[in-house]
Length: 86
Image (cartoon, rainbow, N blue to C red; front, side, top):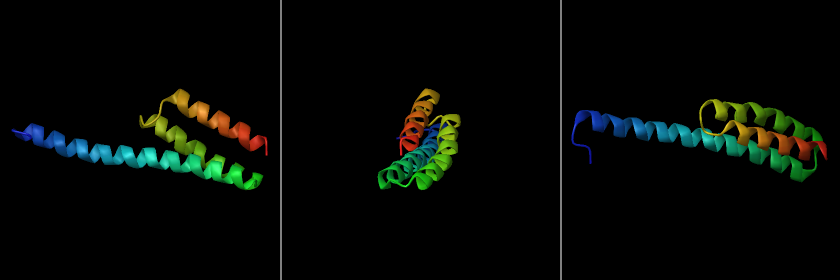
């Protein structure tokens, strides 16, 4: 347990930051899942719309440090390839 003011503050900040990062990571995963669900349904228009919405979400995750830029690029590339194959 924290024994001085600065350590108590760090505990508060860490808890807040962890919650924010988890929410961001969840948003990225949800966006990817929406694209995959649209691909599974076989509706190309829905899949393209979901992909278009997911791309900024992934790029935002990169900017905020939730995701590595190469990981985001790889995910977008693979999803785009699957959408085009529909």
